[in-house]
Amino acid sequence: MNNSDAATARKVVERGFSNLLAIPAFVDGSNAAFDAKSGTAQLGTDVSVNALGYGGAAILGPTIRIRQGEGFNLAFSNNLSEATNIHWHGLEVPAAQDGYPTDVTAPGGSFQYNFPVKNRPGTYWYHPHPDMSTASQAWRGLAGFFVVTSPEEESLGLPSGEYDVPLVVQDKRLDGGLTYNPDTDDRSIGMFGESILVNGTASPVLEVATRTYRFRLLNGSNARIYNFAFSSGAMFHLIGSDGGLLDAPVSVSSVMLAPGERADILFDFDGQAIGSELYLQSNAFAGTATQGQQAFYLLKFRVTRQEPDNTLVPDALMPVEKIPESQAVATRSFNIGHMMQHGGMDGMVMHPIDGKTFDPDRRDDVVKAGTVEIWEFDNSAGTETHPMHLHAGQFQVLSRTGGRGFVEPWERGWKDTALAFPGEKVRIIVRFPDLKGKFVFHCHHLEHEDGGMMLNYEIQ
Ligand code: C2O
Ligand code: CU
Ligand code: CU
Image (cartoon, rainbow, N blue to C red; front, side, top):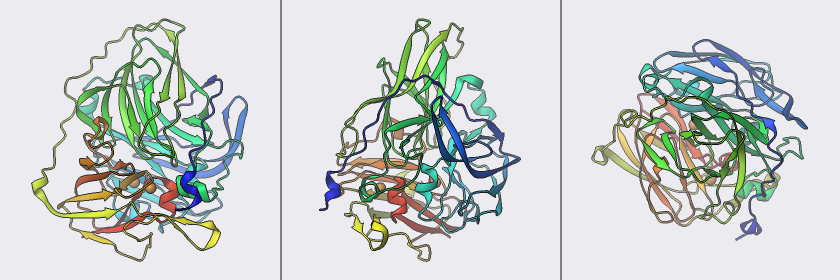
């Protein structure tokens, strides 16, 4: 045991909710060019910080939109003073294009990202992935949405245009101007901030009409988990998870997302009085001693106009082919419940998987393209939360034993990240895509990832 066992997440401080929510610009993914660079970001009327952004944005980056089946093309230039790369989180991308931790672009350099977009329509995202600097670069502002569309999805008549709103939620420390300087506790339990940003806006407000909206929720934080709900307590429709639409909507009153996870939801403001206000908030939750004790507001909605609504929530969304357990050719179990290790230099805190920390020169597991395997992430003996993430494709969650003891509604459909609380064992099933090469899987708690909680697997 060490003294950090007693550490808890920094408390969130709420301010006035008076800054209009920023909506990232769109770029066409079939022919895009952007850079990463540092600059001054205005996060609200009285908050400005040094931050990193993509494509001219002072923080975050444009929302890439592209149709399923099209070719993604991005001419990327690195105008930072440090090496970086881009990982396409949730997408099925060839190894050389996937932002492997040691495949980096030097300062002043450029890289051409090209790959066919195979994934189902849905909400994916992109962020840097350089070895041991992912947490730092993401914290300072680098991330963006990658939205895949299709005619099939469009034919469902879901809210579109200004009624289809991406929301990336991140906690930051604004007193330090977004400097990334974790101490030993931060490296153990995670880097938590007192200020919530939504789409890079501090204390945000969104003006809405009396109709149904689609919100694409992304937890883009380093370590904080959110238990999303509305302050009215109203139920809403969950329509999608990490890998796109569910087969049918599910009615829920909350959705818990760990770093890296997404949920698509429909919320109906019909019946709200003009001038009324409500909040997207994070409810308290149990399961871990380090966070979840506090409930706090994330984003204020102000109802400003009456509008007719012809949204019909479809009974069926998009088929989800269930991978049968009988197809699995192997089961692998990974112990993610080890105690952390305090390493040599710089007060580094290392977080192992099966006793190992990341080594780009090692090949930890080998799988065959096209085959199905069951992977178990075993946090039974652990004391920390670990959202486990696989590169190269999507999986399905089969079961959770210990802790919550069941698969949550927002874990239906296709997933690329699944949360294991202390005491939990999560089993997933995955069919490896036809992509030969070396990929990583890791904890998406970014201080854990940079602290070595990442292994290699090769698809042959
Ligand atoms: Cu979003 Cu390897 O991460
Ligand atoms: Cu990823
Ligand atoms: Cu972790």
